[in-house]
Image (cartoon, rainbow, N blue to C red; front, side, top):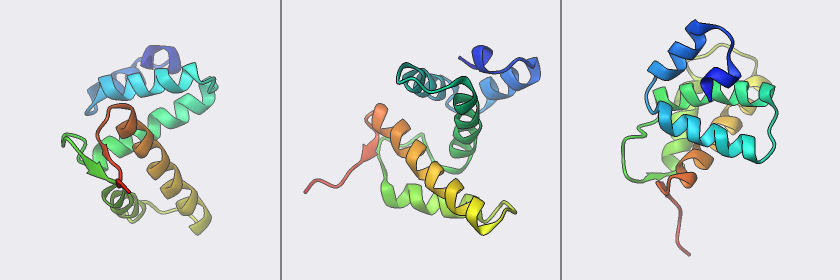
Length: 111
């Protein structure tokens, strides 16, 4: 999947080298099957690397609260406008939730 999205070898290598490359590729393939554009998938691929770096994906279950806390922590490491940070945090939560839900590792409240 990374080879389809990125033309530069260094980008492909970097995406493969980051944690949970297989899972991130499977999620991107899932989004591609839903009809997402190549440009959108490239942006999401970048965000998925951030998610893999800031969220402990190696655990069997992760809660929405943990995802939101990781999004907030990531937002504190970047210098962007308040609007960009708000959108970035929202996208972080949305795609981290989608990734974990796809692999059955999102701990959703059972009402």
